[in-house]
Length: 94
Image (cartoon, rainbow, N blue to C red):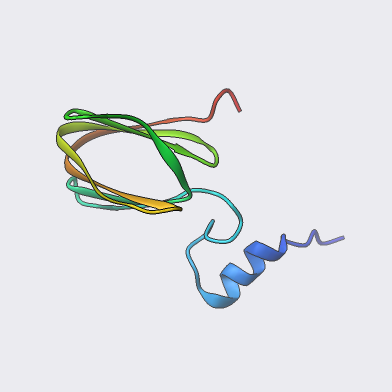
């Protein structure tokens, strides 16, 4: 028997939306080593010149580098800019 996808995933595919837009998972788009756009952001955990750590629906994502800044923060997304050197994910043991 074929297993059906959740409704959110089917709508995302039909509307050609990025995966996770409706299903509650975080989605990240990285532009070179200078900019990252994250949807599914739940807030800021750490913010300093060399590290920005964001809470997402699946855990945390940390951006390390030089001259790190938040370019935009909205109710569900964020933009991180700077010289990105490392990205780490922590799913909280999941």
